[in-house]
Image (cartoon, rainbow, N blue to C red; front, top):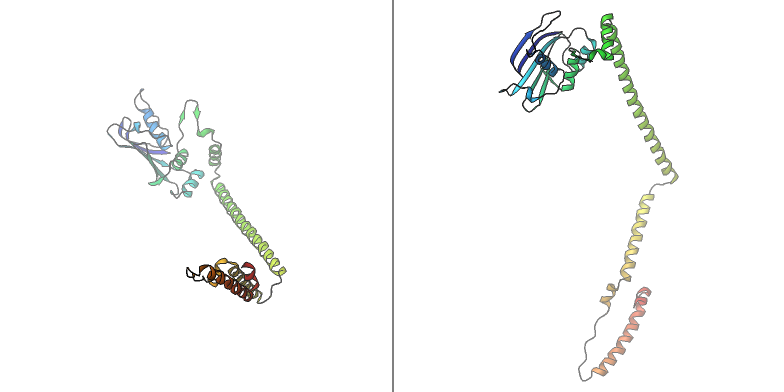
Length: 278
């Protein structure tokens, strides 16, 4: 039930405060008296689009605040409890709109997002216009009204708690099933590794033997490469001195023959691989 309404700087209203008594309230007036402005202010609390043009001239913000009595609406009480907004009783809804078109929403002075404000206000206010009865056509509202009339509040609470426990158990079951699948996959992997290790017939010290064999083969490869490299033979060949000009021809022939003899002698002392290269 709406108990009080406060409007600041909204359209033509600079400041308005209304206290509503219990029972049926009828607001009448001529066309243009401002009845629709009050409904427009209430629509802001129900999530209507914030329009900067709705702010009164000369003001930077407008605000609408309403106080409601929550009553015994089980869904509303559950919504408030779920979002830590109180446990019912008196509810104060407020929305502030600034010139940029942005707005802030509050429930019991707690800042909330616009969808949550709309959900709370939708359980408290229902605006009927021509050819439009929004909440009355809502299946959940129909069931809520029927349960409220039948006095099923305690039964609904027990059902809600049982459903919450069911969801918690389903979540726990899903978590345990995931862990079990992970453990099974890990077991299969470990069994596969064990079978491969067992089939390899490993023995103590085999790794050290393989490492030593690898080092021996690596050294042999390096020695073979060193022997087959032409640069390794450069230090074994020494240049001959140039002969005098008068005896150049004869000295050259003698030196050439001597080099051949020494070359043949040296080849005989070299390993087979080096002799083949020379």
